[in-house]
Image (cartoon, one colour):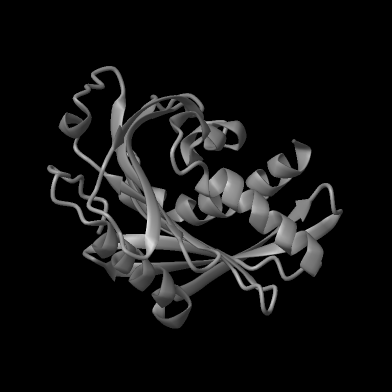
Length: 245
């Protein structure tokens, strides 16, 4: 699992993808290098939250960045409420394309301007309910950057026994989507995201790891410098948006 686009998706296995996602997420705080801790304000609660970032120089032959949020700065009640919102909007629907993770993402990630989704089916998973679709995603960035287009397979896994979900996004070849992007720059994005809530301790885990490349003429070293801040700000962006609806 890395940012190299998959040429074929017919043999993907849900259980194997979940195992890979778990392995990556579980390794972040154990062996990755700790980077900057970002602090953001939650408007509704009028309090600050922390988002810790990390990186791994060579995981699956790629450069990865990650963020970890536990929302320990808010009360148990607020934490539980945020988990419900994460389940509803980050995990999204498990059967309806109009209420997917991607549909809601457009509401708080303003660079995402257009997308097209196509449902597909992977081999069943004995431990998780799953929902899978292909996505063609267009992002508009400030001048002089051109629009970027991402082709992804998005696989949602929701545990049948725990308050646990994984959101897995894999870079795929445009041919898997049967689409072209002649006027835009092809970018690549792969990520794994974990949302977990412990009913016994009221602890919340919201973790995400990604390897990506913006394509075009942007130097790799410059792209690496900006990833942590970009993924960290998605946390307050989502929480403040969810508080406003």
